[in-house]
Image (cartoon, rainbow, N blue to C red; front, side):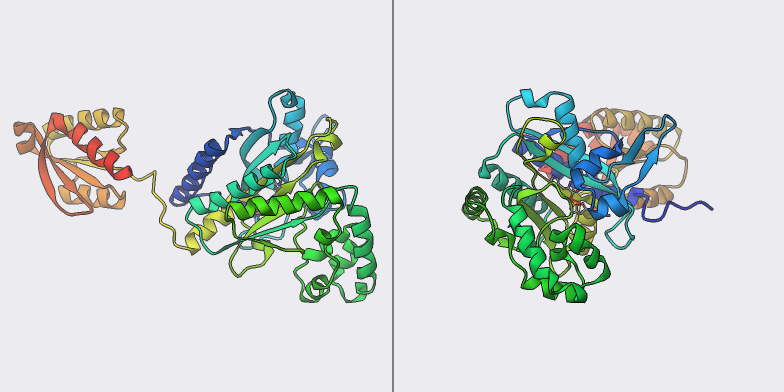
Length: 423
Ligand code: HAM
């Protein structure tokens, strides 16, 4: 028997309500903040990612799915969504539009990671990028949007961490002081961190191993080594966040796992878990567009893993509306009743009401059982008496009561109740 590849998952029909809920809240939010959807291919030139994410990052060295196609092009399944958006921004001349250009995406992301709860080899991200504006007000707007995304899903007990990791002017001096500090602690670090010490010093700060965490606690802080411009930027971002009333905490160990970040970085984490379980993260990447061949163009963005969001919705027992449930089930008894039922089903569907039933000659009991298993809110019962009277019996499955409704009134009656319930 075949199985889905390790680290991938099928999203079964019973899971879909969560996914559609997250997608619809995210899409509504994008409208509020002025973002437009962009879809990019699932694979790109591998060098797009090597160049942007960074040659010595875990993603590029250990996790990228790289392959050669039959024309010997070196391609990679997208391990993140920001670089493809920047590539598309440049390729389609979006720099000529009024800035910032605001784009969002839902995309399958591929990383060869060690699978565990909330960590997959294929996951889906909801992400958004605002390109072409350096103002710290945009940092605050993006962080606010990320925070409101989770609030709109009714997720609670979340932490919002922010930090500034400086720019290409001030980062080299900071990295030097970090390296000098860590040179006294190398022996006590985990094996991965001993390699990071040489190649990716910044990431020593967010290692999850207890001994490494201890060393990181007393390490020099990037936010205290910022140049004047980065320092002012960070102070202003915090002021805006204060005025928006966002409950952020500055976390000097927050550095993110991709090399393109500059200045502001941020992450949203659920209560009581390590950053491996981050619900989402992002930050500024003011040099990336230039590194990809464009003119200097500041930008900032955020992405969240949908699987982790769904996991947290379940853990926090958030009741999601089930868009898939049938609203009305039509139970018919007898040939004539079925003819009416088939017509009614078609009429109601044309009105936008989700209808099941009107298909079988099974007993009323069996049809009601089916209505129940489909989670139908209403059952319309049609028998010989109803056909003669030109009416139906409308049963409210939630309340357990029923009444007679004229057949031609049924559409309007249901529309009134269902529309009213959604408001
Ligand atoms: P990232 O932190 O690597 O950032 O990923 C964003 C989010 O995707 C994470 O916070 C997490 O929720 C989810 N995620 C990451 N890896 C996995 C995995 N293996 N399984 C399940 N979920 C996962 C980025 O990718 C940046 N492109 C975000 C960004 C956008 N920065 C600026 N703009």
